[in-house]
Amino acid sequence: MGQLENKRIIVTGAGGGLGKSVVDAVCAEGASVVATDLPGQQGLSAWSDSDAVTTVGADLADPAGIAAVVDAARSTLGGLDGLVVCHAYMAMGDFLEQDPQTWWRHLDINLRATFQLVRSTLPLLREAGAGRVVFIGSEAGSIGMRGGTAYSASKAGMATLAKTMARELGREGIVTNVIAPSYVDTPQLASDAAYEGITIDEVKSRAAVGIPMGRIAEPAEISRSVVYLLGPYGGATLGQVLNTNGGSFRGRV
Image (cartoon, rainbow, N blue to C red):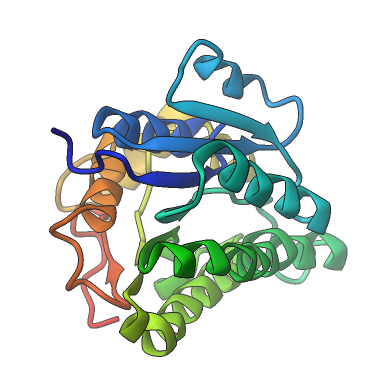
């Protein structure tokens, strides 16, 4: 019997990279999943033959998209036990040069949509009597990142949102935490490579220099941390930022 047997979970940003790894990991532990990403995201087709996964193409920056995801959880899963927020927007650019609309789009997608999604799923979690919420944050939300002021700001907002939710909702059994990786081997590295004008392999090798582990993380290493926070052993971990970064950042945050 898996750690998440009979659990009903929404995973956003599920069409590729880390989100896909999370869906695979929670399904392997017995969960049923609503997996969502932008309409037309080809990665969602990975589960076209799966009885455990319902896919929903939705733009979470649009309230109608959020409503479609929540409706799918209610109609297909019959309720909800957990929410994993993996969706993210990232466009690198220098602070004084980046177009303001691009800058604010990070907060619109990464933070505002997350807030609205949590508010919309909260009734389902309360109906279940408890629930787990996991945000995929970033080390950048704690220490910043050159060329990523908007991304860093949005991830810092996610972290404090999770901490405050933990204070307000913890007594209801709704457990909220953040996982904050450093570099992970996903397609998102293309943004870093384009900004620096180097190859993705060079991004990996440069990043590894500052990581005591000597390498960047694999998606499966992060998704296993998600399973822990969703599962039976993660109940006492509340309002925390789990720094899954190979030791590149160590601090009391």
